[in-house]
Every structure is written in C-alpha cells, then in structure tokens.
Image (cartoon, helix red, strand yellow):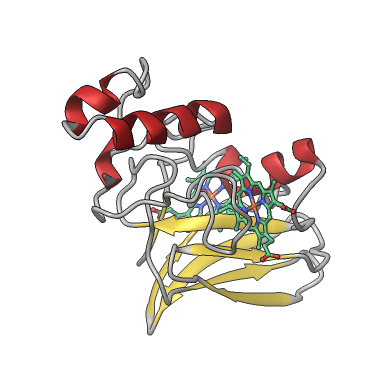
Length: 173
Ligand code: HEC
Ligand code: HEC
C-alpha cells in the first residue's frame, strides 16, 4: 500500500482512493484511478505516511509544513520545518531518516538543535534571526548548506525535483 498512495493533496481525493482500495481487493485495479497524472508515491525507504491530514508530528514528511499550516490557519506556527529524507528525489509523504540532528544557526549566533523524529521531520516555533545557516549532523558526519537562507520553510526549495537550485531533498550525512 505504501507505494500506491495518491499523490493528491486533496483529502477528499485521498478518502475516495482509500475507499476504492478497500472495496476492490485487486489493489492495482482499485488504485489505478487514484494516482492521477502525478503517479504513485515512490519511497526509497519503502514506507510512507498514510494518515492524510490527521494532525501529528509525523505527518506529511517532505510536505510543505509551514505553507500548509499557514494557508489552512491550523497547526502549529513553525519558524523552521522540514524533513530529512533518504533519497534526493523521494516523493512527498515518504518517511525519512530518524535520529539525525538539524542544526540551525541564526544571524545572531543562536543555535537550534532539532532532532528528526520517526518520519524524518524536524521543526521549531522559536524565533530565528535571519539569514540562518543549516547543517545536518549524525555523529561526526556533517552535511552543510553553503549559502545562508532566510526562509525556514525548507521544503520551499528542498522538493523531490529540487526548486530554486536546491539539490532535491535534505539528506542525512
Ligand atoms: C497539507 C497540509 C499539511 C501539511 C503539508 C502539514 N501539516 Fe501539520 N497540520 C495540518 C493541520 C490541518 C493540522 C491541525 C489539525 C487540527 O488541528 O485538527 C496540523 C497539525 C500539526 C501538528 C500538531 C499535532 C499535535 O499533535 O498537536 C504538528 C506537530 C504538525 N502538524 C507537524 C507537521 C510537520 C512537521 C509537517 C511537515 C513535515 C506538517 N505538519 C505538514 C496540516 C498539514
Ligand atoms: C531558498 C531555497 C532554500 C531554502 C529555503 C533552504 N535551502 Fe537548503 N539548499 C538550497 C540550495 C540552493 C542548496 C545547494 C547550495 C548550497 O549548499 O548552498 C542547499 C543545500 C542544503 C544542504 C546541503 C545539501 C548537500 O547535499 O550537501 C542542506 C543540509 C540544506 N540545504 C538544509 C536546509 C535546511 C535544513 C533548510 C530549512 C531550515 C533549508 N536547507 C532551506 C536552497 C534552500
């Protein structure tokens, strides 16, 4: 099932797909009409979020946390949020990499250490002085962003395709 989730962000479309899958045991037939032109979610981890818009720290890994919470007027107001994923082109909703640390250093030198949870998600609601720098750490291994950024919504750039020159998803070192 993990590979057959609809890519649609509309919860209605997702609900219909889940119902169709339940009604038609031949999953391929059941889901064929649900994937749309975007195709099924492809995850290098073989594991995906299946909870739709249910509120959770594990929700929508690789999704636009801050953008969705802001546009819906629901969910926590994060200043920094994103997902460390296992492959540069992993689709939205693919579970990412747990237990690495995202380190954000604000323009004023304040350091935030954000551990990734079981979905690979990390987030903070603390004020961050911009521009900030970002790195991902695991033990002594480090993967750092060269340029400083001012948008704490990491997924604005770190999409599966790579937006604004970003090399795809944020990866573990
Ligand atoms: C497509 C929209 C959408 C996306 C994308 C999204 N969220 Fe949410 N999130 C919501 C909504 C809506 C709520 C509030 C639901 C409610 O209040 O019933 C919420 C609530 C939450 C909560 C509160 C949960 C709790 O137990 O109090 C957390 C934490 C959260 N989101 C984290 C994230 C993270 C981290 C990401 C990105 C990796 C993310 N969300 C992406 C829609 C989204
Ligand atoms: C406005 C676009 C943009 C935003 C927002 C952004 N990044 Fe980046 N990121 C890039 C670009 C472009 C690169 C590649 C060039 C560089 O390293 O500066 C990059 C590279 C990285 C790398 C190094 C990648 C590698 O494989 O070596 C990490 C780690 C990273 N970003 C983390 C983050 C985190 C964490 C956030 C959110 C707090 C974030 N980025 C927000 C554009 C962005």
